[in-house]
Image 1 (cartoon, rainbow, N blue to C red):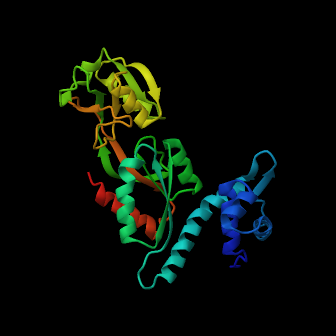
Image 2: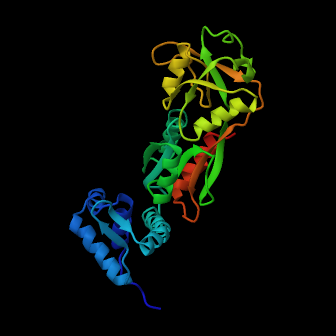
Image 3: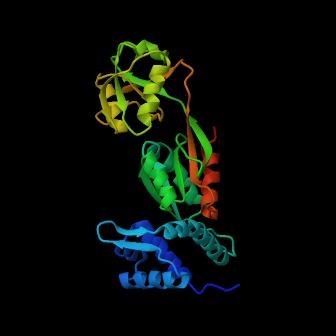
Length: 301
C-alpha cells in the first residue's frame, strides 16, 4: 500500500481555508503568508489528484463535492492528530491546548461563568474560546468545525449531532410588581388569558413559548417582541404585559432598577433540556471530554 506524501501542515491549511472561506482569512488565522496557504493547498490537490476548492471571486473559496467530503473526514483526523500531539507533550499528565465552545446566547450569562471558572481551576493550561450564538448558528458552527462543543437547548437537533443532557430548565412567568397576581408564588397560566404578552423572540424560542400558552387553551396576545432577554424583562417590569422565560436571575431588578416579579406555574408544562452537543463521528479531544464531564457534574438534574 502506497503511503501518501502530503503533510499535516497541508491538511491544516486546507481545513482553515474551508472554514474561513478565503486564503487571506485562513492565512491571517494561521499567522502565515497567503502564498504559503495557496501553495500548500495546490500541493495537496496535486498529491491527491483531485480539485478540492473552487476559487470564485464573489463567493471566495467553495469546496468541490470531493473537497467537502474530504473535509468532513479530515476534521476527525485533525482532532485525533491534535490528541496524539497532546498525549506526546503531556506525558507528565497535564492537559493543555485550545478548546472552542459555542453557547446559546440566553444560556451564557447563567451557565457559563461558574463552569468556566471551575474548568480553568482544574485545567489551567487549557485555553477556552467561547462563541455566543443562536440555535441555528451553533449547529452550523459544529458542522463546520468552528466549535468542538456547544452548550445549548436540546430541541431541533438532527441525527448528526450528538448530545448529552446536563440540566433541565422549567418555564416560569414574570409580571410587574403592580400586577394583580404579583403577590402570588404560583399561578395557572390561564389566569393571564386577558393579559398582553411580551415575547422573547428568538428562533424556536418563539414557538416554544407560544405553544406553552396555547397548550392551556389560551390564545396569546403578543404586544411586544424582542430578542433581548433583559429588554423583555424591562418591558414586563414597566407593565407592558407578562412574559414566559426559562433562565431565572437571582435578583428581580431589571437594568433600570424596576422589579420583574417571577411566578412559578402550576401547569404541567414541559421543561427545556440543556445539553452539551458535538458532531457524531468526530472523536472528542480529552479537553472536550473533560468539559462535558464537568458540565454534567455542575449542572446535574
